[in-house]
Amino acid sequence: MTDASQLSGTRPQIDRWDGRTRRAKRLRSLIVGLARDLGHQPSTAEQALIEQAASLIVQREAMEVAMTAGEAINAQEITKISGAVTRCLATLCGRGRNRRTATTTIRERLAAGV
Image 1 (spheres, rainbow, N blue to C red):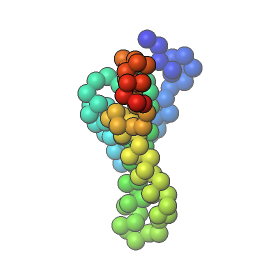
Image 2 (cartoon, one colour; image 1 turned 90 degrees about the vertical axis):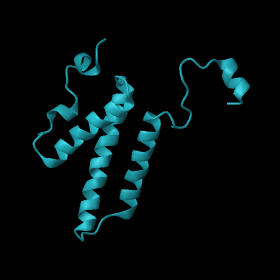
Image 3 (tube, rainbow, N blue to C red; image 1 turned 180 degrees about the horizontal axis):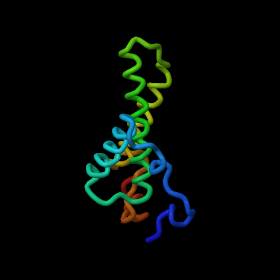
Image 4 (tube, helix red, strand yellow; image 1 turned 30 degrees about the horizontal axis):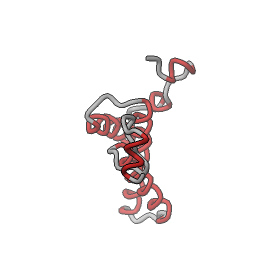
């Protein structure tokens, strides 16, 4: 199977980052951990959700560090980021809204009232 980077001739943005910073290392660690927690090889869509969730978590953690240091943070922004993380992780874990398996038939959905 060909991935998007092979088709477009570009590498994922994450590969272009300087991996030496503390945040970059944390991001990589989260991506590896979330993929491992999934329990199987992530699909392209799952990998995108994993990377999105990891990036949002790193952003939220940076805001939490700033807040702990006494800096002013945008409470509305950290709340939005936290909600987005929750939605990404819920979707990955199969608890997202309207999540259906490919094996669910129309008849089964009608019988369930979905």
